[in-house]
Every structure is written in structure tokens, then in C-alpha cells.
Length: 550
Image (tube, rainbow, N blue to C red; front, side, top):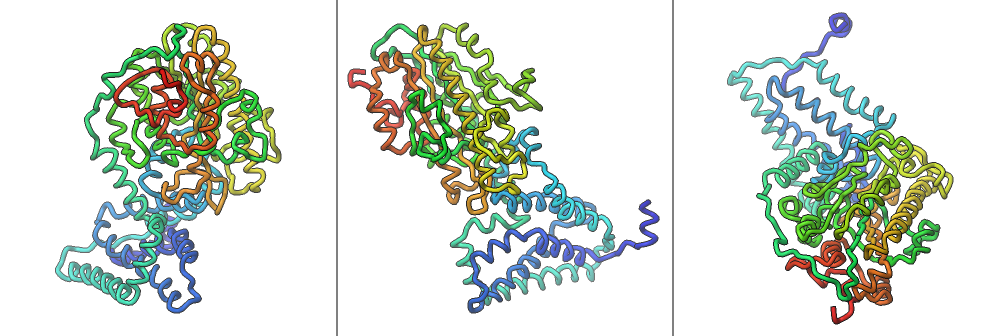
């Protein structure tokens, strides 16, 4: 087959330097569309010399790539490297264009942490077509072209050096005329370079490798002094705390916080305490979940350090409290490594689970029996799949859809904004129902335990605002939809009395004060009466409302 095609259309043979130029042209003009579109939003080409400045950009990129490729595209490995670039660049362009994401270390981490089940929801016919045009076809072109082997003669070496020098001269010439323009643009728009391929993928991957592998530290045990203490008014009941870690729920769509659509009818009836001014530590699960359990504040958070030391659950377990983590999302990101863990995706529940993903209601299956079988203090963490996109329509049963029309596809950019928001809001209504059932489960054990529930989401979500979808934007430029999260607490009468917590005080502070995931570590320790030097009273949400004698 290949032989017959070659007879009809002979394979062109080019020199290595010309091959490099072809590759640079493809990447510059076909795989950096997003970068130049974003530049046009920032540079008014109708003013002064801005048009020439804009024209200089692809020229500079073209010859910069030529210099780089002259160094790294060596015989035998040049085509595999180029094809790898084409594949990665095409995927990066698609997700930047479709969802408005930025490729950085955090996004590389999100990509590597994404499970197969989560990845499947991102596969669409549009992605397949985009991949065919911008990855497969250019890769076939690279395979079709023959690169002329060159002997390491002085003449060939001289031509190679001359090619590099000429490219550098052109870059220097551009810098002579437009250096101030480049410096001003990049200084004032530091995230712009993260739209430039393949540098965004290369630098992001290197940063991830350096941060998560090179800087790995030995594990440090913390909280060795952790111990259980009796509550203020000991009623001789144990504590039963359920912490629900939400996924991708944004505060903007919680009616408890003033949203116009009734998305939390059952929680409102449950008389929960809602915290409307709560922010996340990150914009992705891989950052926020380890951060909220680490005891570090967002500003001081270090992922490598968090992975290398005891977290809140380790410390609570050390104080002889029974801990259980139930997982229904893409993993606990290292938080649950040293505590008992149950993975819902492995359960055989045909009515609630399909293809490794369960509806969050499944998290309550057999939980009543587990609680009843334990007489000790308990902390149970339920990590939900919540409102994980883009397949929002898969996060709730069709019978639970409260708002229509809905966006019943993972190609969310093809839906109207109304349908997309309706579908997302249906996931919030389903979360409302799941949390209500969790509270009723706790109430059924009030005779034996002082019960409490805490819910907070790991991060929020963008639903097309300003052309941005999903989450994972760098925190410094992330929209509020990705960082403003819902948080609520429910405390049983027995818990309030035994721990001397003034409910009216807590409700008042919840309305007025700003909180964040920084508060979870000490709040969780305080809820279960675990004392340690790592506990920070000023970060415990309940502490200001405990009676003075406690």
C-alpha cells in the first residue's frame, strides 16, 4: 500500500534545516491560534505601530522555534519528538479553546491525576475531529517527508550554525524595534505566555516534575501529642462527625446563599448554618483537598510538604478516633493513604453505579451499619463526585431533574447557557437531597452519639462566564465562580449542649465573617475534641461561640 502511494506521489526529501522550518511553521500558524487571539484582545492593531508589533510575533516565534529545533531535533529522534509535540499541542489547544483553561503546573497535575472514568467524559466528536486535523494530519506529513541525511562535514556544520545565527539575528532585529512592547505586554499579562505552545506544556511539565519529584521530602510525623479530651458538659456520648467534601460546587448556585433558584430546599428545612463568604485553597481537587487537611493556610501551602507530613486525619486517628474515608471521585490526593478507605467505584450497585462512577447517594449505603458497629468516636469523610463536569447530566438521576431544559451532553459549549446552568443546578439539588439524607442518618444515632455534619466544596466551577468553562485556572486570575465555595455546618442538639456551642452566635458569625478552607483543619480537630499544639483556636470556626468555661 505504502509502495503504491509512493509511486503516485513520491515522498519529498528535504534537508534537516528545512524540515525544522516546516515544523516551526505548523506550530506557529496552526497550533498557536489561541495565543494570537488572546494577543489581539490586548493589542489594538489599529493604533500606531501595533500592527507591525503584532506581525512581529509569529515571525519571532517561528525563528525561536527554528533555533530550538536546530538543537533538539537530532537524527533518529527528530520525528518522534515532533509527533509528540503535535499531539500534546493539539490537545492543549483544544482544551484552551473549548474550556478557556491555562496550561501550567497545576493543570499538568490535574491531567495526570485525572482518572480514566473522568477522562472519558471529555471525549467528544469535536475533540476527535480537532485531534485529526491538528495532530494526526501534521504527524502524517512529518512521517511522509524524508529528511536528507547529512554527514558531519565542515560545510554542513557551517550551514547549521549559519541557520541558527540568521534566526538569532532576526529575533535580535525584532527586539531592537519592539522590545519595550514585548516587555510591557508580558509584564502586564503574565498568564499570556501560558497560552503559547509547546512552551506551556514543556515548562508546566518541568515545573510539575521539579515540584512533585525532585523536591520530595522524607515523611514527617506531626501531632504526636494529639489526645482526646472531654467536652465542656460531658454527657458520656461519643462524637460522630461526618465531613462531606463536595466536588465542583460553587457558592453562586446555592439558594442558602441567596441564589434566585431554589436549589437547597431540604437543607433550608434542616436549619443548617450556612457560611456565604467562604473561599477555596485552590481551583482544582489536587490542590484544594490536600490543602484543606494539611493545616497550612492557602498563602503558605506547599503541596510537596503536605504530601510529606501527617494531615488532620492522621492526627485524629492517632488520638484513637475511628476514621473512614469513602471515595466517589477521582481519589483522595494522598489525604487518605493512612486511614481506612472504601472506593465506591468497585462496588456492585447497578441501580446507583455505572462504569466506575456512582451517584453520591451510594455513599450512604451500609453506612448506618458501619456506625452502629463502632462504639468509639468517629470521623467519616465522604468525598463526593458532586457537580464534576463536563458531564453534569450524569451526576443525578433523571427523575431528580428540577430544572429544564437541560444540557444532556458532555459537549457543554454546544448548549445554551440556560440549559447548561439548569443542568448544573440539578446537580446542586441532588447534593441538597444527599446531604439531607446524611443529616437524617446522623439524627438516627443521636441516642448514642453527639452528631455533627460539615460540608464544603473543594472548588467552584465556571459555566461559560467570559468564555471560561470547568475549573483549574491559576488562582491569581481565577474568576470568583472557581474560588467562592459553599460551606455549611449542622450540629445536633446533643452536640450543641455537650460542647457548649451557642448556635445563635455561630449563625451570626457565619453571616458576617469571611472563612476559607484554612479553617477546616482546626475546626475538625475541635469538633472531635482532639487537642494538640497544632490546633489553632483562631481558625476553629466554632471556638468563638463556645462558652468561656470550656
